[in-house]
Image (cartoon, rainbow, N blue to C red; front, side):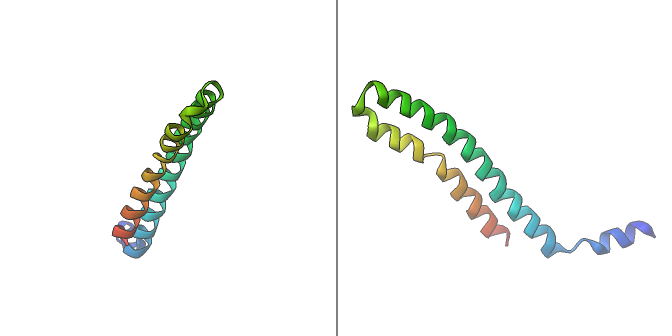
Length: 78
């Protein structure tokens, strides 16, 4: 009888909101970690050769697509 009360207390809308929050939150954290490493390497490369600015900028922006995918998943969950 105690299990039935626990199952009834889990609201599907609340679980969807938790899943959407986890999707965006984890992709944001992963993107930040990746961008930190790529950004520092890009700055080091540009310090040696200023012609690498365009490549460094593109490589720094690539991890942001991970957050966009997380947002899309969150919108699909809702």
